[in-house]
Every structure is written in C-alpha cells, then in structure tokens.
Image (cartoon, rainbow, N blue to C red; front, side, top):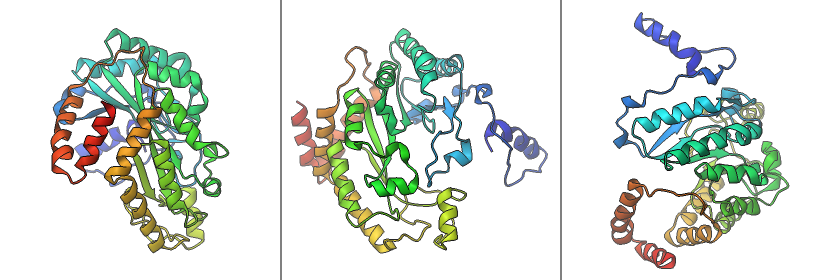
Length: 348
C-alpha cells in the first residue's frame, strides 16, 4: 500500500509495540492530499538531486512491469497549485539544482500537463531565475506531441528517461509494449533530442522472441541514437506481473524476484539459455561503456541535440565541481583518458 494510507497505522502500531511486518491497503489514495515534505530535515549538501512527484500510475500495461499493480493504470495527479507549493517549499529550503519528477509516466495525462501543469511550472521557474533543472520518465509517444515537448523544455526539463526496451518488433509485441510498436524508434529519440531533451534509455534483453542478433542490434541502436545513458537490464519477472503469471504456468520461474533490476541474476528461465543471455548482456555493456564507443555516442548526441536558446539556464556549481573532478579522474588517472581529451577537443 501507499504511505498516505499505511504510514499512520504503522506509526500507531510502532508506538504501541505492535508493528506488523506488512501493511496493505485497499484502493489508491488521492495524492492531491499528500503532505508537502519537510525539506528542512535534510542536509542538502549530501544530495545531488531532489525528488518531487506529480502523478502515480501508468495507462499502459507492459507484461513485465509491476507499476500498474502498485499504482494503478489510471494516472492520479496533483493540482498545479499543490505541485508549485512543493517546488516553492524546496526552493525556500535552499535547493538549487537537479529535480527528478519521479512519476511512473509523466505524460500519462497529456491534456492536464499542457493546459495547467507545465505553464504553471514555466511561470514559476522564470520568476525565480530558473533554480531547478528537471528530469523525469515518459513513454516514447512523447515524441509524437510537439507542443508537449516544447512546453516541457520551456518549463525547465532537460532529460527524460524512456523505456525503449528493445528494437525487436516481435519482442515488443510479446511484452505488450504497444506504444513502441510500428514506429521508427531511432527517429523518435532524435526528435526529442532536437527539441532539447536528452534521452536516457531503458533496454531489456531476454525476451522469448529475442534472437542471437538482438545483442548486436541493441549495440547498434544505442550508438546510432546518441543515448549517452543506456540502462540495459536482463528480463526479470516481478511477482504478480502478467509475465510472472505466464512463466509460472510454463514452469519457468527459477527463484523469487530480488527487486534488483540491474542484476544478471534473473529469476526466469530464458528461452535462449541463461549462459547465452548473460554472455550477450556482457557484450552490450562492455561495448557501449568502453571509452571509444562512449565518446562516439556523446558526439552523436551533441550533433542531434538542440538546446533551448530562449531560456536562461544558470550554471550549477555542482556541474563545475564535476567537470574539475573529471579532469583528474577521467582525463589523467583512467586508461581511457585519450578519448576524454579527444571529446573535449571536439567540443572546442
């Protein structure tokens, strides 16, 4: 259950020495009633980013995803006034820098975003000289809506994480990722970059319809797309998902789900064989995160990317510190330092 419904009874039981291991609730709370966090309790020097939430839930129904089990398929949203109040509280607490809007799918209610939320954020940001830089998660169909992308960039969004999962059409059909099907995924990514959004990508290997070529195909796509941050994972089946139920019926659940989506220790029995899956997974990671391919991918991104020139973005002190640290760590100490300097020379 969600904290709005379970935290109060837990605290009551804890105070009386009767705390339970698990607290469950029926239904979903109205997050418009959620309390504004007390940011003053944090030592903000220890954080690189802050989290704010506008909505919960996702309208899609991907087979492997447990979001709809946890948060439902109908996006629940906060009002513009409530969201701005949370941003103002964070601002008054002294935060300046990155803010991650941690929604399951930020664009689940596009109409409300365009009419109410994004214009309000843009006005608030402008009045305070753009103290935040936002990043969030969204489905690939964001690229279909020029107005929405423009409003997001004007409001201060710089990065969006997109679940691309795979370039294999049969695997997309298998997992029910219908919003990604029958489209040019590469063009969708490039369009978002051209609007001023850096795209981070989520990828999965190990679907039943994945062929041996899937690993090289994924490497090629990541490189061509200029997705600098590519999060590649092995397919796992969270308990309760449609994937878990299907594989359980096929006697292909090997163990309990660990909750770690970056581990190669999948809890399923993959059709391609576990050794083939792990070898292919390592092939992808060792390739795309080697110094030369990484440098080439950054250059591809910078060629595609068109930053919003109409909005003033204040340089962040953390960015300067990170750059100075990179001069030593990557530019001098690491073996791949030549690619670091080649990249800097290219940008000069």
